[in-house]
Length: 358
Image 1 (cartoon, rainbow, N blue to C red):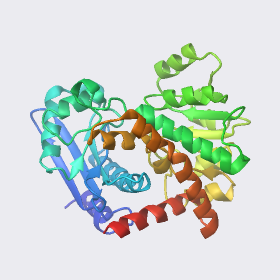
Image 2 (cartoon, rainbow, N blue to C red):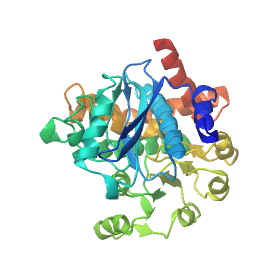
Image 3 (tube, rainbow, N blue to C red):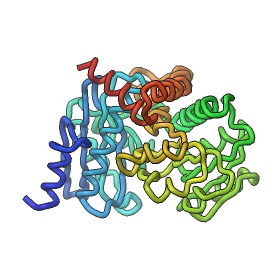
Image 4 (cartoon, rainbow, N blue to C red):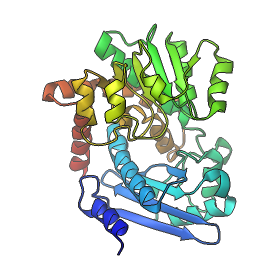
């Protein structure tokens, strides 16, 4: 066993970030598929979580990401009131170079082999059209196109839920659930972020954006000339007068360096696993920065894909996603009551629901 393997196994079996029920390593040499499926918990029901397709620097990094994302899904699904546990899959490689029908079909067969313990959907690097292909081999696939019996793009309700979380932050901090005249910085205006910008502008917010993809920035600016763009995330978090920072790209956005220079009074965004390491939530609290736990406010998408399993109804899903406003306020109240950061309060509530189910 290599030192790297030992590190992964130690994470799985011994660390606080572990405790997963099952981890499956998948390989199909004919198509080039290399994937990891991690099931953190099925206490509340079948594990539900998306498939991330990403060019990880190493297999060890991919496994670690799958473990962290699956754990986050357990908490997200619990806080969303869903009868699902948490799981996540990652496919290793650049989707623009290796994604193919054969690879997606092979991946679908691996998911199907779990017999319904894991229900998959879209995530970074995968889209509705990909889930349509996966579903040809696996009936436990959500996030499909309406033409194939699915609900379509889940990013619409993800953005709506984040917006509800922001409204709750505004209510808690400023006494009014509106973003009117607030300056909001959105880092990442891709699948979710550009929908979030629409909600913010409709509510009267001033919006500043950035994205590593120039075409994503251009799409927003062409549609909304009033939006301002900055060079990168480092510039965004230092923007003078910023009220809310919304990380909507990859995880780890909140670390020792970024929190120290963040000008915003609120962090509320769509990205998963925003806290780079345990303790960052305390650093935010020490700087009097209100943090809306990511897995709570970005649950709109998982609410949508879970509903697809029972016959999708958009209005029903939107009503459930609107409850993110009340859930976020409940977390802030619990945090104040227990004298802990909101992230810790959300964890306690989610862990209690999972424990009750067991």
